[in-house]
Image (cartoon, rainbow, N blue to C red; front, side, top):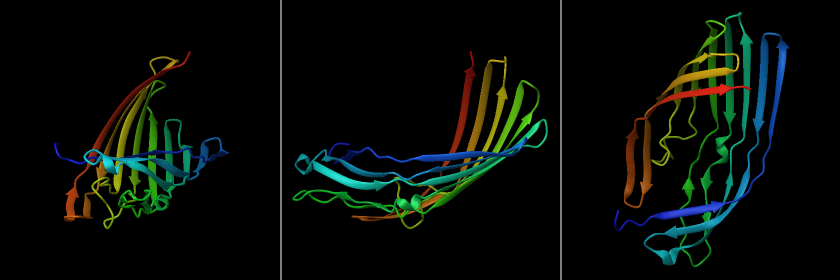
Length: 221
């Protein structure tokens, strides 16, 4: 829009982390897996630009720490036709409390982005049903907590707790080929925002849902 001052903040850095994982097989029908992903610290350096006030453009920097996460999953072949699975993931989103952008004087400061996010859990269960040697049906249900909260949630990320319901089919037209078709629906709790601005609080409600359809084919040679 004409007369709108667009603010852009661009920065980058290289960070290092690690992943650790292990798989255990207590029986021929059961497998258990665990995985840990470390957090990564970044010292971001870049620039801030203002479309209508280029005199305010200049360098900017910020510190950012991504969340660590831990996952555990189990797979069990209940019968010759039925497999059952379950998994859980913990994510340390409390690493992200705020983003403070540092500017050198005499450049004007940039308001701190406040997140105050919480650690969250995700739980999922699923099952496979073998119709034939060529066809397998898949089912899944998951509950995914949001790291946001009603006090600090903003329109930039109007996220809320969500429940996933998924169905799929695997079909093997040949020994080398595999076709996968899947559908998932997200039931998302309505999100509420009450964000302070220079003109007063921005109050609103968000209704969110998502439908995801996927198809893939793989072929071995």
